[in-house]
Each structure stands twice: as C-alpha cells, then as structure tokens.
Length: 110
Image 1 (spheres, rainbow, N blue to C red):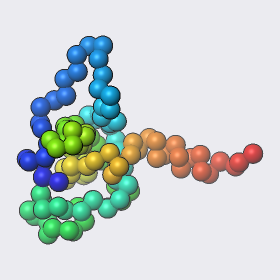
Image 2 (cartoon, rainbow, N blue to C red; image 1 turned 90 degrees about the vertical axis):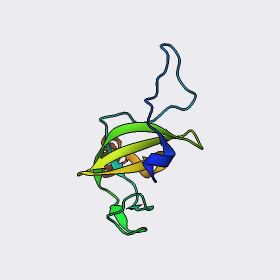
Image 3 (cartoon, rainbow, N blue to C red; image 1 turned 120 degrees about the vertical axis):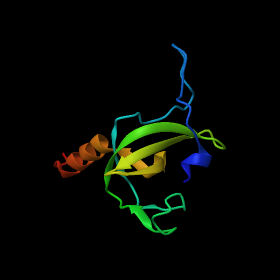
Image 4 (cartoon, one colour; image 1 turned 60 degrees about the vertical axis):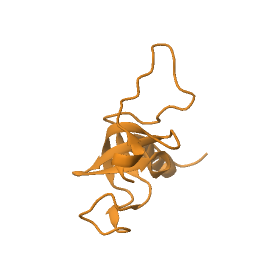
C-alpha cells in the first residue's frame, strides 16, 4: 500500500454531534496486532516486493488514520518496531481484544 497515493493525509474532522456511518475502528495511539503476514506491495523500496514486512502476531501502534481515496475506507499507518506500514481493518486487531480472546479460550467452559 503506497501511502503517498492511497491515503488522504488530511485528519478526519467530524463536527460535534455527528459521526460517520462507518468510522475508523482504531484511533491514534492504540496498540494493534497483525492478523496476517503484511507483505510489501512496493511501497517500501528497501524490501523486495512481495516480501514480508511484518510477521503475523507482531504488535504495533497506530500512528495515523486516513481514508483510502477510492474506497473511502479507513487505512491505518502502524509503527511496528520502527517500520511504519499501511494496514486495512481486516489486517489488524486491537492487542487488548486479542489478549482477552486468548484469556477466554483458556478458561474452563461450564
């Protein structure tokens, strides 16, 4: 995902009392986990195209939220240990939610 061509860097400005029908699920500063290997689509020139940028299970921090210009869906710039990667919602999950799921899976069922 090339942030220079796909992301409108203008911050999302929502007037008080109004909310978009489908706003971003994650916000700046939240910790997220990669739900799949994130591959280079050519936007990272230091890594060959198709190579893994971030391995699944890696934790990162949302550092910017933008909109994909064509689809108007949220795109998250996530810092994974110094490497910032553009992610779509299905590619990440809140780290806290994943930890809760893991905890629940270990609890005995009635």
